[in-house]
Length: 234
Image 1 (cartoon, helix red, strand yellow):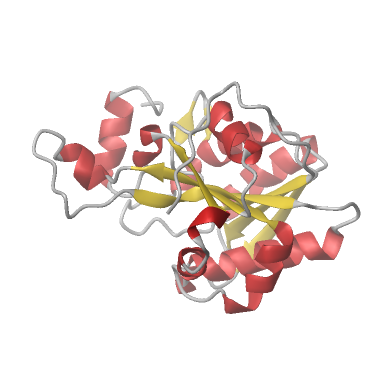
Image 2 (cartoon, rainbow, N blue to C red; image 1 turned 90 degrees about the vertical axis):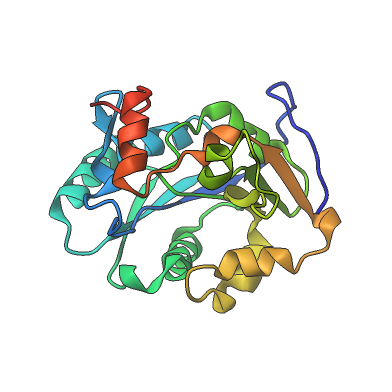
């Protein structure tokens, strides 16, 4: 896979982009809704949505789980502040990430009023994600520009690195809108998009390195560490 280095000074290309925020996970391993973890005094789902507004997207689609009134009320309050925000409820949140992504794509297609060139796709639990990284992804010219980072497992073994643990190339990522539409029907299960990206020629994939993205929150131990580091409010 090709490697391209971006910096904060990389000139952003003129693009009309939309955002899909995948936030319908049930947080079963964590034992509490990660959407409602608190960063800088506000729910994580709110913090991450505000972060995407700094990229000036044409639309922001947030996919949330069904039958969770607190998450729904939290994000509805935010949507009232930002007219570009659209909320989609995933009634099949236990079927995997791909279905959430399909719902997000369908929503963009349904209300698209201007030309959308690219789509930024992200989750909400990479608690150190920042604006410079999102802008670097959007500055890429390839059909897919993905994030590259180590896994938690590799970071924990940093003094004796296990070469069998490879880097992760994944979310957040930016993808050409027409390509995403072509792939829409093939998105199934939990890793549909990653499988499709791996089928592209190397020169069509750009990468933006950022090991801060390694720190996502899936387990109580990871949550405790994030709070200890001050990345999330205690």
